[in-house]
Amino acid sequence: MNFTDRIKPTDKGITTYLDDLKNSDYQIPTFQREVVWEKENVKKLWDSIYKFYPLGSILVWKTDVKLQNHRQIGGHQFSDAHFARSEYQYILDGQQRTTSLLTSLYGGNIEGKKGFDPSLYVDLTIENNTETDDEHYKKRFLYIDEINDKDGEYRRNTPNQKKFNDGLIVKLISIKEDFNNLQKKMIKHPSVDLNFDHPYIEELGRMKQVLDNYRISFIELKGIQVAEVCQIFERINQAGKPLDIFDIVVAKTFRPDENNDGFYLRELIDNFKLDAIDKGNNSQFFNISDFDYLQIIAILVKENIENSGVKNITNRYLNDIKTEQIEAIWENTQKAILKTFDFFENYLNIKTPQLIPFRYFYLTITNYFYENKKPDYDFLKKYFWFYSMHNDDLLSNTTDINSHIFFMNKNKNEEEYKFDRFLINKNTLRNATYSSKGVWSRAILSLYSSKRPIDWKNTDKDVISHNLFTSTDKPNLHHIFPTDFIEKNPGKNNFNKDSLMNIAYLTQLTNLDISNKAPLDYIAEYDKNDKFENVLNTHIIPNDILGWVREINMPEDALDKFIDLRVNAIISELKEILDDIAFEVIDTQENEEGDN
Image (cartoon, rainbow, N blue to C red; front, side, top):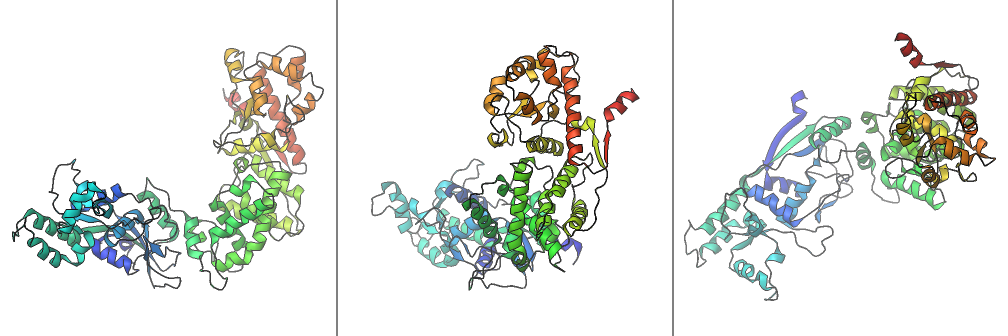
């Protein structure tokens, strides 16, 4: 195919397009499901057509791929479960306009408007006004509920009812299909009196010209893989929802339910979540994105089905997943996903997906649990912290995933394996601040969470169980050296007061109790509890701060000293976890100071 023919602008007459639609020449995939039908918007749409204004292009994807499509649009039947073509034409952008045009011309049913007839009528007595603020369209285009006076019961409609009876308000579809009879009837109307130049006759002719000559613009995509289709859609439809590869795979793998042999991926995943909830599992991890679930499936198909054709987890290969492949792995996939979520929650004490540093962990760890009868949890813990806290991003692309799986499979298959050197930079820890999407922020907060921190005031309370993330993705974090306190008492501190080294998980009540009090004051109160020193250990907080409090002697650079002490405490914690792995610590701040 010529490269220029891959993306081709074209056009088609409006009635030809709608007739082709009724003949099943176009399909609307089920992922195009958000139609908001409003009377006023449909009238404006037809007013633009009446004035021959452009409507914007309809995006059509021509492909041999069969997707699950809407069987009905606006009450019109388009295809059955066995519908097949050598080439399908899918409307990717333009469903709203298409549905509005189809139902206003051919009638039908509008969801949520039971009993309403969406067929459009035209009042030919409304004169054409060229003013840019013209609102004549509100009277020119009418619905039957604006015409029918129900034998005089709706008096406001009586004038329109009379015009309708006299043939001056006509159905839009009648202009298309019965123009000659309409014209004959109108020419005999007393007000027209055989005058072919009469404004009513001219208006009828104008509407016929509109239906005969108005052309819909199309952008046709042909010979293009689904990954590029998604990218094109997103760039064209900047204000709308991006075309989601998950929705395309759902539509493509759909199989009608015949003889209990149906398949619907979205329902499969939803039922997996609902079944877990029914069994009392209310894990937040079930709320990972549909795309995450899809990539988990892809990696398991790739690793466990020979010659699957799924060589990667990019959109290009996600599009190649087949229904029977998902069915082949699904039973064991569910078990592996449950074990993955359980590992995060109950072995690492990470209660929310917002803290997982790399979303690719879902893929690598689920693959490790897949059909693994003897998972090594000590290995998994080392694996998680090694790659979460390593100074280099070692799990940020699909190439990394393949090397991770190769490495983890050695443990899974009871073969020899060895972790590479672990590298951590003190300065990276010092400078890490809270970010709901930052890798280092998530990694450090995950480490804090894994220690099962205890509340400072109520030392019998587990903080994490009372510290779920909110809708803003921000947990209840406390500055150990409150920000207002540091601003009012800067001392000789140079480090960032918002450093995660100055952060601890606390319950909201304790956080409010501390407010902006000086550390000497509020820690002294909590230190009266004999358990408090052990409580600080659950937050990886060095006990040096207790020495300052007990001696009532806070150094002028206490924040800086504290941050460095906590950096060292975190490094000691990691050394203990990664006990048999080569461990290297660097400090780029020292190098920077040396350069000065």
